[in-house]
Every structure is written in C-alpha cells, then in structure tokens.
Image 1: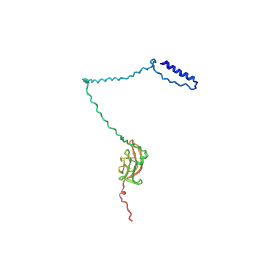
Image 2: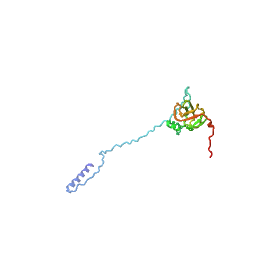
Image 3: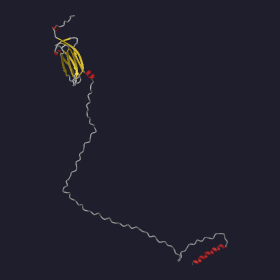
Image 4: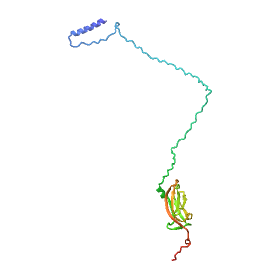
Length: 223
C-alpha cells in the first residue's frame, strides 16, 4: 500500500506544473499513519515511588525502684540557722551637742566688767570706828577681787579677799580693822588663778582717832 500512495502524490505534483498556472502548489498535509513496519517510540513509563512511613514504637519507661541508702553513722543533723532580722536604721540623724568654746576676754573687756566702789569722801578724815559701804563684783567666777590698803608712813598693809562668785555684791569696810591711824593708799584689783593683778582701781582714805568733838551734836540754826 505504501508505493501507490507515493505515486499518486508525485502525479498530482507534476500535473500542477504542466498546467503552467502561477498558483502555488497546494500544500499537502499528510498525517503519518502508523504501519506495522514503523517503529513507534514509546517512552518507558516512569515508576512512581510512594514513600512508606515506618512507625517505630517507643518502648515504655522502665520504673526503676528508688533505693534509699542509709546515712553514715557519724552524720549529725544540723538545724537550719535562724535568720535574725536587723532593725531598719532610722533616717533621723543623731544630733550630738558640742558646747561652744568660751571666748577669751581681753584685759579691756575684763576691766569694763569689773566694778569696785567705796562710798566715802576722800577729803574727810574718818574715825577708826567708822564702817564704810563697798560695792564690788565681776561677772566671771574665775577671778577674785582683792582689797589692799597701805599706810604711807608706817607701811602697814591691810588685805581682804572678796570672792563674789561671779556676782556684784554690797559689803562693809570696817576701818577699825586697820592697824594704825594715818593715810592709806588703797587698791581694788582682779586676781586670776596664776596670781596676776588685773584692772586696779585706786584711791586714798585717812583715819584718825575719835575725839570729844565727835560727840557734840551739830548745832542746827533755828529760822
């Protein structure tokens, strides 16, 4: 059957040329026919591999019995230490009083605070049995007030220590305690612990014996 099919195709091609037509020869689409003697390629079918999952069983846990071992013979139970809670410190600061240092006075300041007054008239001679008023003091108990009187001719000395204890006090000056009559130069001064004399106040006083004229009352004029 194949030779006759090829001949027919050739004749149709020649006939078209002999006619002298300018039309292009018709296109013959020949569908190939599978014959017995044509080897037809058949691709080898691809094998499809389907993965097979294999489940491995998990062995069950083995419960091993707990073995309680005895404690050593020398083991001694030590109790847990007791927690001691310390008190919370206070935020309030503790005020420590520090005494202020005492300011040291100058000599001029001490003399200004020192007072020594004897109430009398320096122009008058006083009988020995007269008692005069004295006012003396210092506002610092560390100092002692000293009264000292020296008679000009004989050199006899009278000394009194006046401890006013840091106060201003009024006292009596008994002239009868003076050893002799005469004119005395007296001085009042401060004395510190070292025995130094500070701030002297000076004056003079005259003593005499009392006479009969001292007992005569003073005549008073009648208006």
